[in-house]
Length: 373
Image (cartoon, rainbow, N blue to C red; front, side, top):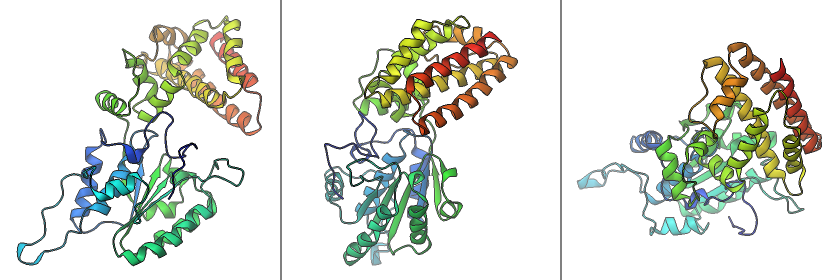
């Protein structure tokens, strides 16, 4: 598989190193131990579904497993001396030949499937059947080597129906000495028959210390106080890197300031927010803006339902603003209902290419209506 440095990769968060380049995995010792236990028991399943929220380290774990499998001899009895002791870590020396080959995308026993580029040079929004069919050639060429083969699909959620059915055939009749690692952010989007043929490794959101360590490893330029970032990122390193690269902390503070003006509404602030959404080349920032508005609505609903704002705060004075706008369960239901309607509205608006500014203003006006009840 070749790598093109000047094009964005479907399996790499903006501003973060590629998962194959990430040296350590934080916060998921149990998942690593579960895989090692299966490896050492000689019952290594041919397919693994690595699931969890976006950005918590699923792809990093998959590449660690790939390096480990390709660099570690099979646990076979060595005659007089018996079998070697079972490995206790997925760590492989960076100077190991397999590590170098994987880093250079030159490992013959390794294939990585992601969304590909179409004939117009644009990244597809799905993994298509031809992306999966590439594996037929990979299996044919690598079979002569006689060693292990590893396939990573990142993410399996992005396969269209034809691609999913093509992969299902491989799961039903897996090639010898092959391990498939399927990364999934939303397992419910996968065919039940695919899920049933995989063993599962479930990864959860990272705690504060692991988040800090993972972001430092990624070379993130962290603010002096990372508590607001931790609240918005919800344990996802990928989300934190996106927030940092798109100035998400400032953007959420602007959204919260508009909320603080409700029910009267800071119209000037609302118009400025809408104009930012409609700015040229603001696609990613617009997506982030919609996500942050949705997050605010969810945090409002949670505040009214529990009687206290979520901690840590995601911006200065957030707790007081949430408590004022959502003081009781009745208000919580109103904000939760609005969140559901806004989600449907924004999905429809994006599908039909509705003007981003109009979509943002419509959402803000609906927030005003809810606050005024």
